[in-house]
Image (cartoon, rainbow, N blue to C red; front, side):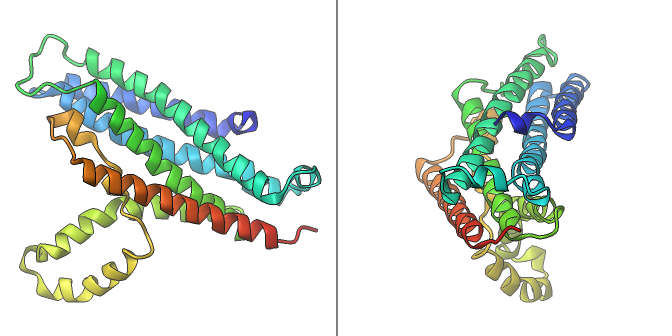
Length: 259
């Protein structure tokens, strides 16, 4: 797990996250209405963006670079199975993600509290349990992205491919829910667009999880409590997809030959 913290690009990305949270604070401070809501909303997006980048860099550090430099042959020579190696590295990434989100979440909490503290909002933000639940949703979101990127690293012979495809997966998974809702509502009367993109979106829904279902920020921002059923199915979806991706990664590593 310590090797995941040594890369300079990882450190730079983490600092970038802190800078962007400071930007969220400034955005809220200069807003004439609902400053804490704006700061918190931007902050959640910043935390998710930063953590996806960090997780993908950790996949590069713990999987891709070790394969590219043949360093992976050393741990595989130890009396541990390849499945234990893969699962152990993946769980290390998830732990690093959890620790990093806790740190960024604390920084975001301070930024929100300091954003126009004398301004009394009509609808104050909730920085208690709803705030923690929103951060937990980001942890699950990034864990799924990490599992997919790790599995890609096991079959890829191009070092940059897990990073690129992992980022594409994170973007498409987040946008899938909004796309489905837009098309199912009639796309503002554009029947041609619905007929053209509808079948494609229906197919993609079976291949990519709707990561937007893990975005629970509305509870903290506006008091819109998500239903227990909605959250339960979202968690089951995330854990199931991550488990499938990890299983495919383990199988790919077991069948891969290193020379």
